[in-house]
Length: 270
Image 1 (cartoon, rainbow, N blue to C red):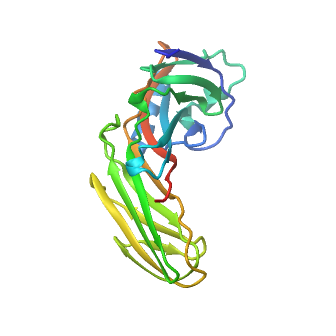
Image 2: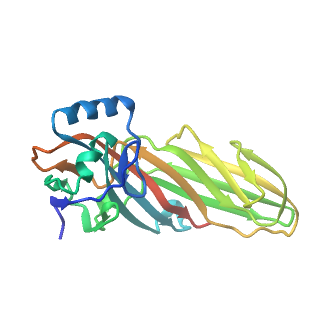
Image 3: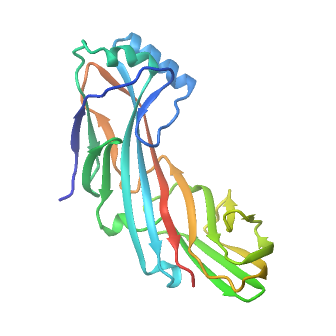
């Protein structure tokens, strides 16, 4: 069944120390202005809470044209951070501070929710509205004894619910054989240690191509390999989910950040 709104309550054990404190494998930093705002809020006897929703898109795209054969799964986590100045209250074993409760809202596309070290982890359902990957990629290989030609085509998916820009894109693939030289357009980076060819794309057009000719001094021809891509997208989620604190005289929501990131995101070679 779909989950329209889920309520969660928790108590936490927190280690003392400096800086902001978060729960989860992927924390986020708070600016000094935010920290100042939190300090002011604490003086009003309310504990500020910052929360983050991170969704990871895992996509295995087949070798057919533009990935018409693909498997898409999306998982999300909810993380919580507290300012260091609120730690004395939160770590006082004699305190009768109320439990922190929050709602996961607009959660119709979420199939299952599991509490864990990230506070909660969830998986999206198989609805077509959330199974469209943000980026479609296809790779083509031509392997000769003395060189390998690689082309990775990419295209933004207009059927995906995400409309904000994809940032920090890195495309990678491995090339086997004894590589002597690489020519590429746009410029790519070759790592001899990992046999990896990578492109960093700072400005993404709606569609484009990454091309390279890898010259071999021996051990050819190369074997075609998967092409992988990493990216992130801020201030959005694929699911549309959000979080809200339950009404409380103790806690105050100071900030919510939402982000989509590429997980295991790759295509098979043509």
